[in-house]
Image (tube, rainbow, N blue to C red; front, top):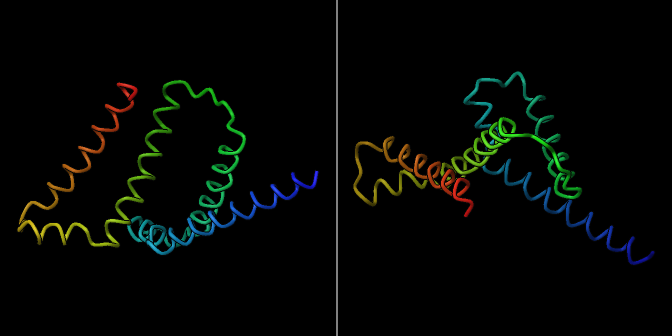
Length: 137
């Protein structure tokens, strides 16, 4: 019994550390403020906070209990779309923070067509993901 309580405390502590780190990364990268700025929804910040908290709780519960949810194909498509938007937001926020695109453009001498390069990168990522899931790699 003492072992289980000890392991529970260790697990809870580890989870709190990870949650704090992810939250700090979200704030440090400016993902939330960037989304609010782009969408011009500063008056709805409480909704963002609630959605982030609910997502963290739901993600934790899904990870710990691993429930089976019969979504069928349309539900999986919606889930995939939202997951892609989430990951894409993270990638773009990280790329913006480290200024990778201006540095890359300067190093390869690209003066025009940077938007085409960004779109090509996004299409390549999307194509790779679709092939990955279609071919079940």
